[in-house]
Image (cartoon, rainbow, N blue to C red):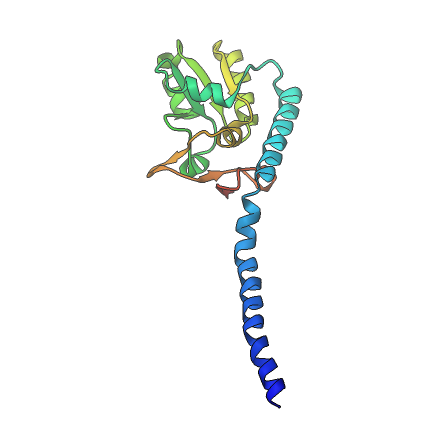
Length: 186
């Protein structure tokens, strides 16, 4: 009896360690998996492929601007960034200093001599708006290649009413391609 009781005591600490390891894996597993840089790279590639398809089919004549170049340009006073998403999407987050489509159109004369960059979630809606803006007003608007999703993947900041945020509206499940460090809302 002493042997089996002694064996049982030895197994108890091993069983406890194993239980802790399983519990830790269940709790930490998703966090560790979400840190996989390969997953973010795959998401960024998916954004690029989707954008290329949209551009080819709907607005091939619209000029793109790469997110990193747009980040540099955004610091200049002669640049205006236009968010063409819905007010509900803009409530979640926007590119710092961006104006809504409605504000832009209301103050169109003020922006006529500025470099205009438009965006939405993946820059489909902004590509359509750029095409319309050119046709109706003769204004060239550059389209942020890959939209807000590409912007955050390439290191751009986004803000809400409180300041810098990690929440991003991704329009819908199909566009849930934000980096893992961000909370996607749709």
